[in-house]
Length: 147
Image (tube, rainbow, N blue to C red; front, side, top):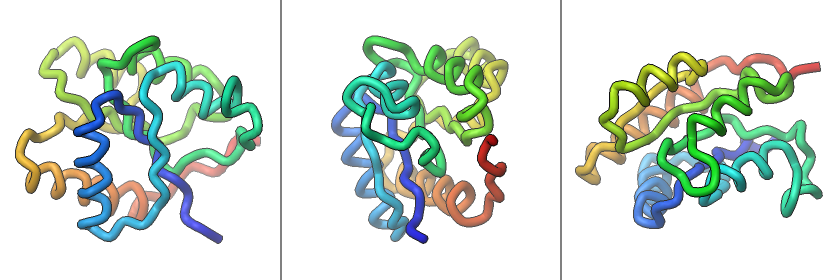
């Protein structure tokens, strides 16, 4: 059985490259699926639009979700994830530059599993992503799939 993918919802190409490099540096071999806005994330997760061919029960291991996204913001994406029985227990990590306390509170009120502020320093970023990968992909026991 192959490892499940990591869904990265990120509109900044530099942050996508940093995340990809950090995962490689930490030897996290899960496929990285990158979507660039909130609507594309919803399309991917719920197998609609350009992702209609996808099996909606084949969920990623974890979603790394930015807050400040075009089309549909990250908090709205998180709300939709939690409202759907199929995705309600999917681990969602808010990975953002937002320093706003209201974003932090809203994320946890919407049942984000974690809230991580992106470090500016590359080595700190690699370490943060490595710790995320180790915890969510190796140590964490995922909830069973919804039936």
